[in-house]
Length: 369
Ligand code: SAH
Image 1 (cartoon, rainbow, N blue to C red):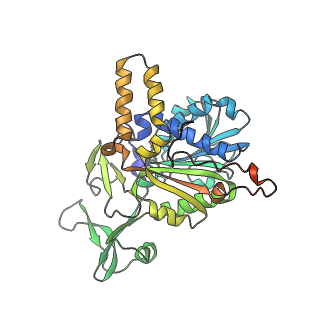
Image 2 (cartoon, protein in one colour):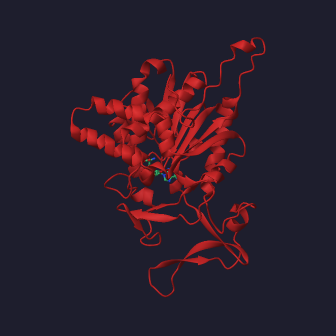
Image 3 (tube, rainbow, N blue to C red):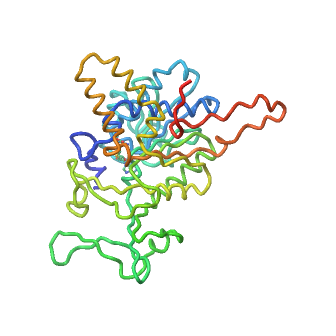
C-alpha cells in the first residue's frame, strides 16, 4: 500500500521531477562515466549495469543510447542490465520505455521477476532485491533512490537520545502527530554513532545495509557505484519532508499519497562501506557534470538543433541541472570504487614503463588535450 507500490509519481504529471527527466544529457554523461571506468580497469569482457530504483527508466534508456553509439568499442563486451524495482506500476513503465514491449514475465531463472531485450538488443532483468542480482563485475547506479528509503529520527534531550515516533493525535480524529519516545528504544541504542555531535539526526539503516552489500560486491567482483542524490556530508538535521503535485506536503497527512523524502547523509554511507571500498565525493552536481563535459555536449546539441524552440529548451534544462539555486548545488555525486582502482600495478622489472593512474572522471577537473 506504499507510495511507490500504488503511485510512484515521477515526472511532470507526477509529484516530483528528476534530472534524467529534465535532460537527456544527464544520462549520457553518466553513461560516459561508466565507459570511462570500464576502460580504466582494462576493458573487462563483461559488465552488468545495475540500477536501483529506475523510476520511469529514462536514465537507463539514455545510458543505453550512449552504449549503442559506442557499439564498436563495446563490441567484444557482454553487457546486461539489471533493474532493482519494487513498484509493479513503475516496472511496467520501465519495460515499455526500455524494451518497447519485448517482455517475458516470471522467466525460468527464478531470481528475476521479469525479463526483456532493450531496443538496442541488450538483455534486461528485473528484481525486487539487490541480493537477487547475479554477482560479477558491475556498475551500480542509484539516482534519487536512497532519499526514498525510510528513516528513523532522533532528538537529543536532557535525558539522552530519544526516538521521534508517529502517534495518533487523541484530540483530532484521523490526524497523526510526532511524539518523543518516553524512554530509549532499540533503534536509539543501535543507530546513533557514538561521536555524533548534532542534536537531531535522521538515520536510514536500510541505506546502510545496501551500502554494505554494494561495498562487499565491489570488493569481490570489481566495478563501480555511482550514487547521486540531494544530501549532505553529516551536517544537516531535520530534512524529512513530503511532495505532492510538485508542492511541499505535510508528511503526516494522507499517508501513501505523497512522495516522502529525507536528505541522504553521505557521511553515514561512507562509514557503512566499512573500509571495503574507496569513496569519492560527495561533490556538487554542477561540478560533476562540468567535469564530465556538459558544456561541450550542450554546444554540440545547440549546433545540431534546427529551431529556436529546441535551443531554448536545451538552455532551460541546462540551467535546471546546473544553476546553484536549482539542482546544481543541492544534488551530490558520490562514488564507491575498489581500492585496487587506486593502486599502481607493480611493475618492478621496468619502472620506466609505468603508465600514470587514470583519474576517475567527474571527480576532478576536465583536461582537454
Ligand atoms: N531513479 C529515478 C527514480 C527515482 S524515484 C529517477 O531519477 O528518475 C525512486 C525509485 O525507487 C522508484 O522507482 C521507486 O519505485 C524505487 N524504490 C523505492 N523504494 C524501493 C526499494 N525499497 N527497493 C527498490 N526500489 C525502490
